Image (cartoon, rainbow, N blue to C red; front, side):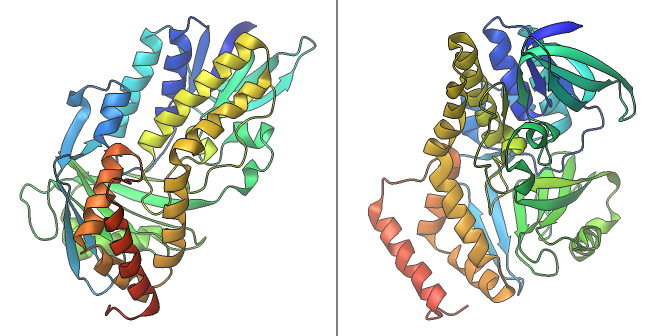
Length: 395
């Protein structure tokens, strides 16, 4: 039976980053990835990601300069990005580049899906996985000192080892990738992300049209089980004239909206990315946070293995929440209140007309921190929000 220092389950942005970080330290790493993995994603990445993770610009298929918010009454608010941009990536190409980079650093890649894990007499984890490109492939086993689970919102690794993982809050998301129109119009902009806050398209999240250069993602999400996501996307495509665009593929999957309270089992299993719940509420942004968590998880696991003290595993979540927890809390409150019904959604889009809100929003997006440099802007936003909350401001 093959033995590795670390087995990383899942080859998305979090898993590929964790494998790359671990392999760079000289440890033996197995990166196990499912060929049948499906993940609907708008594909947006901030400039900070390109810088923090040394990602080449040629992986960007588009640079977005405007975000358009569409209210329940079809009022439109265009928010300019400003001096920066919102980068768009093709997840097929982007994720494979990250996996290839991990392999070039020394990680071994295998195609297969996690089945179970159990401890042997020496205290090592024996991980069983299906070998090949099918859920029903031949089962194989490897031994490892550490398991890093980055296998998605319904993580099998987390459920097998992390207390409370089965209670993760998540959105059901679905999107269709279509061929982008040749010309821009009011309904489609090749450098504009359109976000629809309309109950029929999503009762508690939002729907979107995100251009990816030659292709475009049209999707929606909802926390409500039974909400007809496919019908909502069909409605959105019809209303924007994108129903005539060639459909390339269709994808659906759960997306978490709340970090797990615990990321490790206190011994030799730790999770990151969607498996740890590192997707921002309200916005649904996940790629940057997934890669950041993957890096922190790998670093914490490395120190735990080096020192023989598993308590170091806890530092990954603590570090992540110290840096980004406030953003997640604010966005969670915003989603719970403003996405609740169409009247509130209408007021939310109205708030987005405010210049202070626009500047602080994109400052925070670019820098991945809540901006504190302009305290009076925060004061003005507070009172404007209060006016909308109390109904003193017109919708």
